[in-house]
Length: 364
Image (cartoon, rainbow, N blue to C red; front, side, top):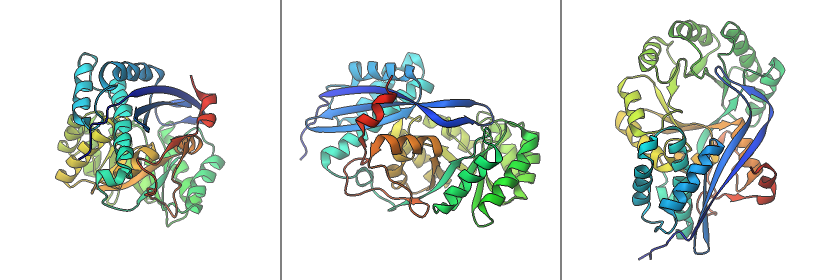
């Protein structure tokens, strides 16, 4: 019988990493990404988890670690999670509060697996040995050459699916999609992501035009909060085109409403936002019950093990920014091979170790 393992120390660090080029999607532009990294210690073992959020998220993480988490038995994971929910009741259980909880929850899962000296996917219960990824980027700030180079590069690396951003200039999007199709050839699946930039009427018109280039995935054609609009698009989209959303979901109730509204054909979830791996498992259970496919949003290293442990997961997003950061920051980063990622079963937990010297220049 495993003895109690108290969390003896905890720490939060915040890093801001500039992008390698200006980036934009249909509704936002940015030039950096911020990672909030949590470490939890028990004895000689250390677990890590993170979210991509904001400096303010780090402050809330610090408060939760001090007032709720440190000193608790790591194997009382459920009790810790419920205590954090109670602590943020008056702050609201979305946005920054849930991203803070997500970073801590991810570290708890990692630490538990490390204490048992097993890979995280084994603790979760492996369903598959590997999972496909799609290369994701194609920002609306890119010129045609940048777009072609990035998407074609993923195809050369073995990806059978790639995704590009649309929505900044709707009238130019059919042309850009055509450029992308020529760059990747006919055998690669092409996804588009509008980040909620279109109206329902625009999205329906563009869905028909995109289908001429065999676009198979239309993500957030309208705001993911517009469930009626998503339902209208899903009901009238060209055959063979998935309608996807869910990356801005923070609670199980949000995802249930999206499913009940028949707003999507593929549900997305982000373990760095929706309450961590624990929240992702809740979403996976909803997808199982509704017989709906599940795909992870961004942060590939934080999703690899859990996506190999839930039945409805079909693929993961290999997002340019986050893959670049995780490759820079972590020993144990798993590169896709022939378009799939596979957990390293020789390493305990999520298999990641922070490269302190590489990360330190970006600390804030």
